[in-house]
Image (tube, each protein chain N blue to C red):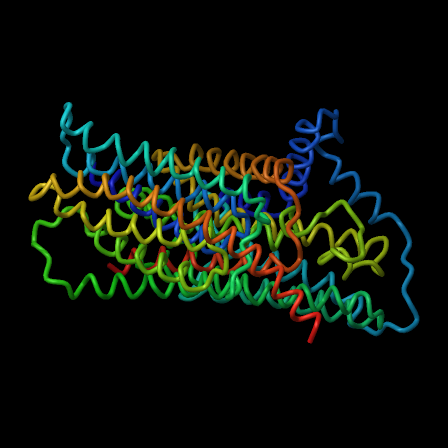
Length: 302
Length: 213
């Protein structure tokens, strides 16, 4: 029971804090004081109190976008091991998790198309075309993890008990996997080399452009859903990269949460030291991530 | 030792992919240099030898591949005022995929090769074959003289890596390879400068004739 509560707590309460940590890291790099760590929570509270303006051309799909995206991200988060003990799981739930995220993406894109704005349609087109390159990378990564652990559920694949010996057996391929999942995390979390969450430059927007028409509570849900999705993918990466198996589940949990915060800080560092890619170079980087995870798989097959 | 060797071999393969996928010439030159340095250090790891003789084997390749040749190429970039982009025939994503296919083919092929049972790391042969293949890809799909030279260097790195297997049998061969590097460096620089000077005049005349037609 305590483990389940902890899992839910990490899933529902931690995501905005990760954004706060990333933002603080960025401001530290640029020598600013930066927003408070809990700024994302304040923003969400503010947005949820606001009224709603909905365009007359929209249908029921428009509010469904943020709602489904958030629900899908939370469901996927239930399958990924976030607590000391596995919460939910069934054979092949990795596939379910990937497709839940895809479902959320589909509805976000559909809601963007629903507004009838050509501009948001452009964003939706970009989003799905990049996602179609990012998804195979995640699948390849799960394929490798399945081969390493022999488990068919996410919690078995990513359990520290499996991961720690795997590092000594197949360190190089796990390092490659971690790198490719990190690239996907940056792409999906609309982070700098792919997309800048802070600018609103028409020519380069991918994720923000789809939610221009969402206001108030719906926009809050969009932001929260994106943060949850970031946490879910980040959790997979942290489970791969920091296999804490100390023997005490609570210590492991503490190490996992610390790993998540460190990952957020790392994303902040990447955002500070890198420039944005030209839009035409995004597929190259995603292909490279795919090649990395493919190479990891080849190394495992030997 | 084995784990470290494997890790370095993986790093070499990753540098291959990096060279295939990046568009900045300086970065490509640096990557090829880094690959050379890793290659130069490998004999020490693979054979655990230390001493003056080992240093003699290790130092020349490291100095040449890691410092001298990249410095020369950078100088060529500066003096010939080449545009610092790669401009491939083939896009970066396709060449990356080609590289990945090459890696898979190298792994498959190395299963079939009649190697000695006690062959060092299972990765040496596939990594060397993959590096050779990537060198071929670079040689054939890049336009400029300087990128072709880089492809040639990657190819040579792959051959050197394969030579690692013969280290015990013929250390002499490796030292010869180092000398060959030196020869290649000088030879290549001559070719580069020649190519470039010719290419630049060529390009101009072609532009002019196109205008006339």
